[in-house]
Image 1 (tube, rainbow, N blue to C red):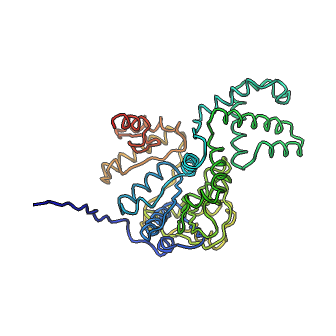
Image 2 (cartoon, rainbow, N blue to C red):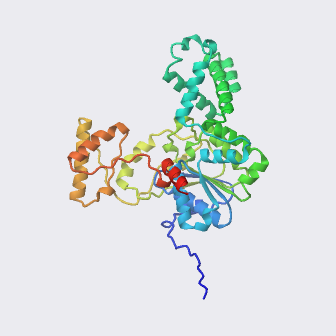
Image 3 (cartoon, rainbow, N blue to C red):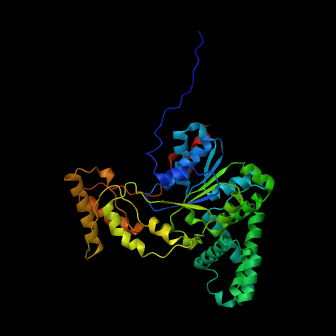
Length: 409
C-alpha cells in the first residue's frame, strides 16, 4: 500500500476585525492612497492586509518597511498567515532594495561601506589632500576627527538631496562659498576612490539604484504589471529615497503611503514630508490606547506645527484618536532625577504586589540611554527585576549566527 502525504497549512487568525478605514486601505488597488494615522491606529496592520490581499489576487507587492526589524516582522506575518502569498510579497527597506537591484542588474559587484570603514576612507582622503585643497581658515581643524565627521555628514547631506560634485561646486561659486567649492573637490575625489575600490556608501547606493531603474528593461522585471507598492513610515523618506520610489512606482502603479507626520524623526537626515496626489484615508480608532493618556497628550499634540501638504480637516481628524480603554495618567513633579527614579521603582513594586500586574507587563520609557543607570539602581533597590531592552533583531538575522549557519550547511 502506498502512503501519500499532503501538506495542509494551519488556519491562522490574521488579526482582529479591520475598521472601515483599514478595510479601505486593504482594498486599494489603483492610484495613490495616503494613509494618515498616529501611533497605535493600525496603519501597519492595514498595509499588511493590503499586501496580503493583492498577493492573494496574484499580484506582486513591494513592501518598504522603516527598518530591518520591521521588514522581518512583515515577512514573518505574511508567511504565517498565508504561506502561498509569501513568495509574492517582497518586504524590504530602501537600502536593501537598492543593493539587490545593483547586485542583479549592475555590471559591477556591490560592496556597501560600513560606517566605520567610511570614516576611515574620509580621514585617509583628507590626509592625502594638498594644503590648498581647503580654505586656510580650516587648517587647524583638518587633522581632527570632528572635521572628518563634519565632511562625511556634509557629503551624506548632498547625496540625500541628489546633488553631484558639479552641483555643489556650482552652488558654492554662485554663493561665494569657498568651503562649498572645496567640499565639491573632496566629494569628487571621494567618489572616484570608492569607485576604484568597488565599494559604495549608502547614499551613493540609492543614487545608483535609481539610475539603474530608469532602464525600461530593468524596471519591467523589477515591477511586473499589477504590482502594488506599499511604503510604511513614508514621513521618514529623504529626497533620494523618494526619487527611487518615484521611478519604481510609475503613474499606473498602485501605491499606498502610510504617514504619521507628527512622528517624523529623521528630519536631521533630510527626511521631509511632501504632499502626494490621490485619495486620503485617516485612521482614528486607537488600539490599546488609554483615554486618560490621550486626553493628557491631545492638547500638546495640537501645539505641533502644521505638517506640509496636510489639509486642516484631515489634520484635525488625524490628531484626535478614539481610545478603546479608560487607562490612567498622572503628572508628578520631583525635586531631582534620583527621587523620580525611586518613585517609579516604588510604583512598579506596588503594581505587582497590590494590583497583581505581571513584571513582564510593565515598562519604563526613558529619554536617553544615560537614564538607564539610575532606574536600574532604583529598581534593584526596590526588588524590581530589570531587563534593559536594546536594538533587538531576530536570532537568525544576527551576523554571527548567519556565519555559523552557513558553516553548518
